[in-house]
Length: 432
Image (cartoon, rainbow, N blue to C red; front, side, top):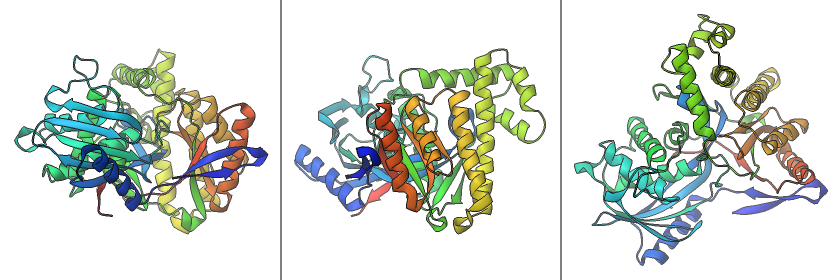
């Protein structure tokens, strides 16, 4: 559901409200029944995510700090006796059909085109990872509806993958979603699906947040070994809110820019003689080396810029977790809040200057939010469009959103959309 937020200067923007479980389940169930002529076996849902800090660190073995959003993708599913999968989405026309035995990697003959690649890819990956009984999952009919904004950098693709993963986990009797270790294996399968079948070279943060998060907590994810810690996050107790500003600028991760940065980081790690840039960040943190010494070992100026971002961003994750841990809930004010603001602002500067993944729309959203009193603002997600976040006083969220909408109108951009993020529950069945 969306509403309209009136903004000063006459601009208007959408407010993206999360559906209740009952509404989301009814939407998916009704679409399924109308399309396939019988009710589904059940409905499952998975959240999108927003990353507080730790951008482009996941594929470098680093640290990140996402939360699961209350905005979720709902899937209604019924297993079949054959190996056919049929897909319908409220967001796309028509019914698509895929033979699971014919699913092929992106770019190969027989590759699945469009959004069904993410769903069919999960079935393929569960089998390739050896997680399915007798090596196979059944065919299935699937209906999808979602309130996770598409193309906003809030992991709509991971939400779809993870919803399908927990659905297949249930109907195929995999038994993986019952504990965190099993959910980590489901997340790994979803990453493989997105990388190999959908052709998007993403890291593992999005899927981990969707499957392994905890309500009321941020997820500290160590992308080197997959370990997680749950960091209490009660912004409301401090009178704060996390405002997500969807610029609605075009956001695509399959156009080569994301893959290019990942490759540059891998090349830099090889030059430095380490498995990943995480080792460099750890050595810097331990005082075993300095940034200057690390960067002096790289002749390529592009590699130096990318490495500087990754090292500093991992340090910002550690810094922010320490601040949230030592100033929980209502204590997150004054000096502690100023430090959080510094970390968010510094992350945006690094992503804009060293990683070069921001955009004019993202910069305008973050800059305007700061000017209107936000306690830090930054782009979030892969960049090249998508969303920015701002930590704001809860009673100022509407005014900040209005000011950003006005700034977009003055700049000649299309109207942005807004949502308030809170740390929500992970993927699972919907009983409503």
